[in-house]
Image (cartoon, rainbow, N blue to C red):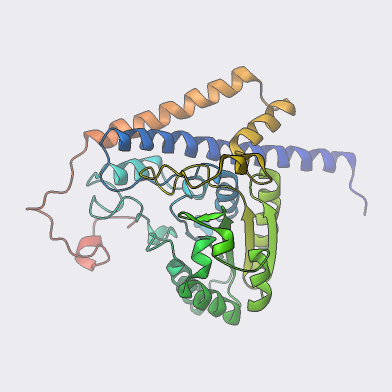
Length: 344
């Protein structure tokens, strides 16, 4: 049956709102991470700061397809602040962890990127080298044993991490068990400072999906529409029993590996090549070009989000760090610590 004009109009409005929602998460992530980077440079954050500049569209699009209220699980990495926010992570969880507040999800005990709320489906990052995939596998198998068949998982990995043994073992396991898992591979062209041609010989990392017997998609990770549409399809396929879905997003890391790294090994001309653009700038231009917002509204949105970030930072800065003489320093998973500490 042909779609009516009304149905087409509704579809366009839905796509527009989805785009704007994703853009909001992208912009909030960028503003938050820029604030954290400034705090790091001012010596106010202990440990590293790793930002997702250039990766926000790919990250947010996955996070938006996962629903923690329905039992979905999400394993983000160091550049997935946009996805974390879209999945439901509170800004305060990020600022409290980076600033070492005892009120944060890890109670100021762990490195600032190793934060999560497993009971709410947000897996705390173990390593960026593929180890979280097997954790997500285990959580999905456990749900299967309990008869929870509507939940799916999303895991993130970089191009460098796909060469690690843990990645291959976990993806193979997910494929054999036909788990409802989305594997988001951010091919940002560098594994720290190692370029793609020194990491793998295949033309496109999505070719590896064939070897595992799973479905794969290769997309422009700087194109928000492409990211939203592809992750929506992957989520639908995973939920309907088609097993793991691998989505490879081609983009460029627009910063150093971390704020301690000047990225001098990234040739400036790469930013002028395919996939070298800034997804936030591209999305901003699209929104203004479509007249979904004007310049004044865009600036108002930035100011609103900046206020949220500043408030979260100010709150975390006022809170105490862990007291070494009062803390028992047992693992947070230990029963006597989790009692009375909801959400960990």
